[in-house]
Image 1: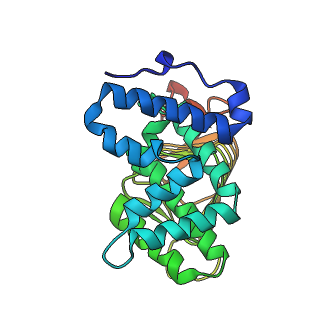
Image 2 (image 1 turned 90 degrees about the horizontal axis):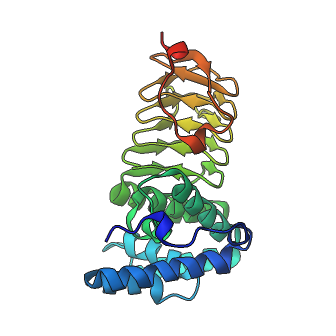
Length: 280
């Protein structure tokens, strides 16, 4: 059964403000419906969602399950994640904001439980957040381990020192690379094969700074210590080597301004088509 978004009551404004309890209650209701409709997934859904009393516990379980290996046990990773969530409540807040971003922007997402269980972009981003927390605690080697396992398991390579805001969606997520000194603002959307990288062997601050509400199309490469202004669009396949002003669309190799962003919220509308005025 394909459970459409309108088949479960919509997320209320109250739920968005009282995230921790109300959103988790919504996810558990969805999980019970999913078990009813697809009993063969019952063990997976119970282990991943219904056996946990909080969002944080479910996220810690998912982190440890996906990143465990012969080199690092699931139990050790679970203890790390539980400690991170207990000591940094902002991790859960960021995870819930990212979850709502995927639900709102991705038409293939019909339930809040889907990204937690099935979407590697969401899972990789939450794993990065624990790796970043470890980095901030001075535990750089463990943070590098998390980065390595995310790259191996999800095909997403985010340096743990990179700074990423909340309400971020990484759609499909294959071959995402985000460098050490990169900064990504709030409410950013990016598709697969995006690189936020450097331009050579220089040290220091060498990676892009992405503003709030930016939409980055599939395969785009943003290189060097450059600024991408708030609410701009980067067209698929573009190579961006210079600053991008706010509320503009850039496209091409190398990218140049081809028009305005077309709206005040490109990362939410996810419109990736260039209009007639934008063609070059």
